[in-house]
Amino acid sequence: MVKSISRRKQRKAHFTAPSHVRRVIMSSALAEDLRTKHHVRSVPVRKGDEVKVIRGSHKGRDGKVVACYRKKWAIHVEKISREKANGTSVAIPIHPSNVQIIRLKMDNDRKSLLSRKDRSTANKAKVTQMQDIN
Image (cartoon, rainbow, N blue to C red; front, side):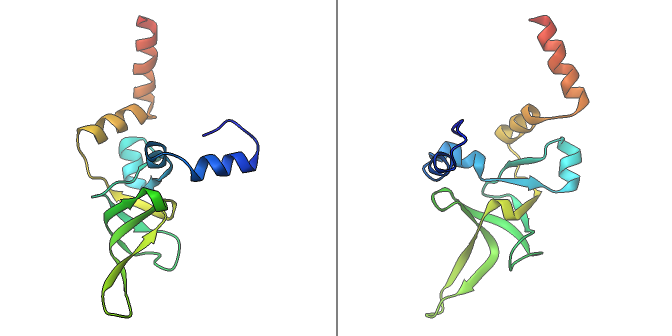
């Protein structure tokens, strides 16, 4: 984000952010068990993650993320939808800050991200050891 204290500039930077910045902003908190396992508080939400809604009218419901709509700052969750007047079903958009990730879709990129963000004491020792070598 922009290093400015101006509210107007902060809002402009937020709402005109490019897609690669929006990905980071659209992060969700991890559930307690995942937080203790990976030593990470939050990660960017992505398609395939299982989430639980913790705020709003759909609080308590969970499901798999079907789509991440970066342009609208929203995610679509599998079982959370509503019927339109003509009978078709439409996914309800939910902001990622209102959900908690309960299961991560793991692949090599996700594993490397979690190892980089790891805040455990073992990881800190590894980092200081690498700095000593340099």
